[in-house]
Length: 282
Length: 353
Ligand SMILES: Nc1ncnc2c1ncn2[C@@H]1O[C@H](COP(=O)(O)OP(=O)(O)OP(=O)(O)O)[C@@H](O)[C@H]1O
Ligand SMILES: [Mg+2]
Picture 1 (cartoon, chains in turn purple, green):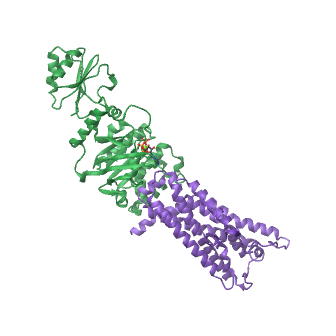
Picture 2 (tube, chains in turn cyan, red):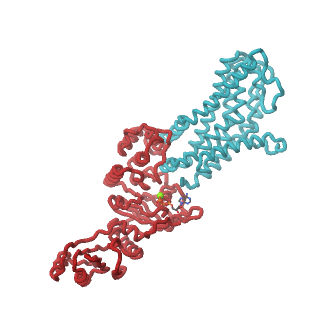
Picture 3 (cartoon, each protein chain N blue to C red):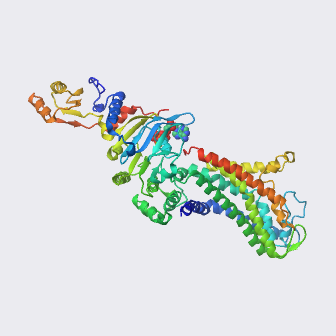
């Protein structure tokens, strides 16, 4: 009974996060990406041409080339396009604002005297940010799926290894990829939560988190800094493409998830240490 | 007993009746407190602090605070801006860690026992804070959900009742962003009243309210007190404290400079007798002979402090009349809390740095 009662705060938090206009606007932007990509590909391939015929960047699999042959690839292409910045920025906004926004608005003190309990509140906040990660990723994936199916032919899926698998298996892998992408955001979610416990300004926390993301993404592309790169949270993000190999290669994926877990543990503990001892004066 | 000074000639009439120096007022009040004005039994103390202190980065906001709030009292917490009232309340509610000293609320140490203490405490701290994008009702539902001891089955009903109680039922479904200051204040109060509470801590509860709203809040406070809730409220409005509070404490520059019952605080411990008459010299001589001290003589009036064992006032009056003093007015003067407050905290308008 008591456990059920404590879930009230989580429910309230989820409702509060997902009812906000800001959240809906972020979802709108995320859902718009596959639509834009789909339309662009459609226009470019109208006369039977292909997309991405030029030299391929080394930081992403060429899903785009396949979109016009198989609409399902729009889902993969959209996830690959939003994972480096759009998705983590959205997470940065929500995670950065999670505690700092309440502190800035003064509602944090009323939650604490309710009493929400500092640990419980922090856990609930992190849980709601993770829920946002999953939903945001699913928004991109579903939008990609719908637009892809609407604009392009759909059929058997050619894997990156050149083999073909049935559409149903391809759909299953798409779902797996969406979950992996959501899982890739666990690290930045914890980082944002920590930043959020340090300041009383939601805007400052969001800006700091997004700034950190951009910095880390830049560092990850500078060859001279390769020593630190394996420890950067986005380093293995694009490993999700390995799901589309036949057979699936798990090493990169495991490294990615391990790194995310490490970030979650480190920054989760830091956030807890900070939040449970800090003075709440705002 | 502090020896009152002789009446200073030419003393301004506006301060007559008030203790003339801060030191004198403090002496009188401290004495009153020691005489048992504040409950001495620990079981009856709802808030108790020992040498409580808080230092923000640079400033010492609260210093060596020994506060005792008796159960069942309506306790006024007074002090000029920046004197440390809100800081004290934050420590009592476990929002900030004291630099030194300890605090007990409802008999348990804070902030360690916050989980068991706070569900029994309703609080309004430094004004209301709301989610602008939620309606008033949803704000309350959220704050109630944050309390793990609150029963979700009765949540809706309790939220409705709290809204009703502060007169917000009609505006309950408006977004809180669109609330006026007074409406926000009322919603904050409603949040403090979501459950039956043993203690209500209200930091400037009537801030921003219209006169009607202030009256309602005062009535509400009296009603809650009648139900046995202890109410601890900070305010700048001395009238308000005088009207609703049974006890009060005065802070200045982070230190507690007086606490006791409102009656003791506003009168010192002694009564003051005022005699209105054209024959002031003769009246003053007679009053002094009957043990009155600290006599202040004005053009048409003599005021003095009654001795510890006051003479029968009817006899005193008869004696004055018998001696040919034309008595036009005779009675005990009520010193206002404001006079005491100013005497204790100083007249200056500037906030202490
Ligand atoms: N978060 C803070 N950081 C640093 N100093 C602070 C902080 N909050 C308050 N102070 C300082 O502590 C002192 C006491 O402030 P506090 O808010 O407790 O006063 P108060 O009695 O509530 O005043 P008011 O009547 O204006 O509400 C002031 O000198 C103030 O400058
Ligand atoms: Mg204050």
